[in-house]
Structures are given as C-alpha cells and as structure tokens.
Image 1 (cartoon, rainbow, N blue to C red):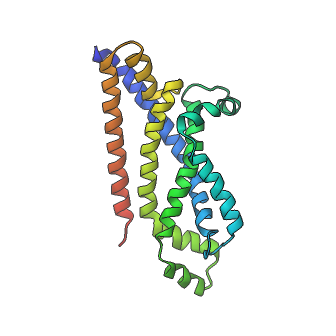
Image 2: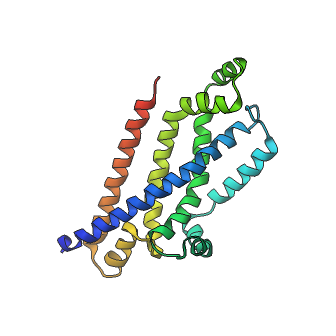
Image 3: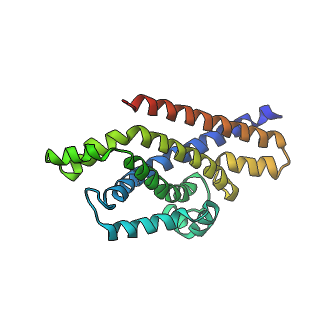
Length: 217
C-alpha cells in the first residue's frame, strides 16, 4: 500500500521544499537587514538611535510572541487579499514569511553582537562609513554565525510548513492530515514523519558544513 502512496509523498515533499525555500529567500531578504538595523541602532553602535531601536524591537517582539497557528488563522484575510486564496502552498508562504522575518532579525542581531568591537573601532579610525562597516566588517565577520542561525530558521520553517498543512497549506503536513489521519492510513503518517526527520537532518548537516567553511578562525 505504501508503494501507491509514493507519488503522493513525492508531490508533498516537493510542495514542502518549495514553501520553505521561497519563504526563506523572501524572509531573509527582509530579516537580515532588519537584524542589521536592530544591531547598529542599539546603544553604543554606529547608527545609535534608541527611540527607533525600541520601536522596531517592540514590533519584532510582538510578532514573535504570536503562536504560529494563531498567526496562520489571524491573517487569512490578508493572505487572501495578497495571493487571492487562503489555501494552498502559495498562500501558506505568507504567514511563513511574516513569522520568519522577526525571527531572522533577532538571530542576525545576535550574530552581529559577537563581532569584536575592536574591529568596528579600527574601521572607524580609518574613516570607514557606516555602510562600509556593515558590508565589509560586520556581515563578513558574522557570516558563519549567521549561516548557523539561518539553518535554525529553516528547520523551524519545515515544522511550521507542516503545521500549515493542517488548514490546507499543502505539503507533508496536509498529506499527513488528509490521508494519514482522516483516512486511517498510519503508514502514510509514519512515512511523512520519517521524511520530515530526514529533511531536517539534511538541512542541519548542510548548514553546519557551510558555516564551518565560512569560519576563517
């Protein structure tokens, strides 16, 4: 019976990878700059602005405090407005991106804090602009840590994409609910769990390997 489910499992895996990959690209494009802003506008940093920092930080904390399943349901009208539907893989990417942006922002901020202040001070003494310090000092020095942090985000996205399947988001979660649970086919439930475990292991290994290669220390 499991052989009959292979096409379904393959399709669901493809949908999950698609959701996670596209969501991660969009969230990273917005979350990494957010993390840079959170760090550089903090006290004692090159673009210090505590009022702005606290406002942005409060918004980030507020979004991060919302459980994903609640966020998933709460923004259904916005999702429908943005992509024309509240179900399917494309619709599921909207809450995935929104949930990931502040997560990535805080992770990147943490990585940038690990960069020695001496490097920034040396760059300032040589007349480097804030933009040059960010692009030539902070980000390159923090890149191994950032990659490791982004790996954690991808793994979280895999789990959240499965959760999105509970309300018709497609992917392995949707397959597990519709075929494994509702149709009483435990072999499909087990297969989806195994695939998710393998997927997470592959992501973790790839992320660790890349982080080690970027680490020049």
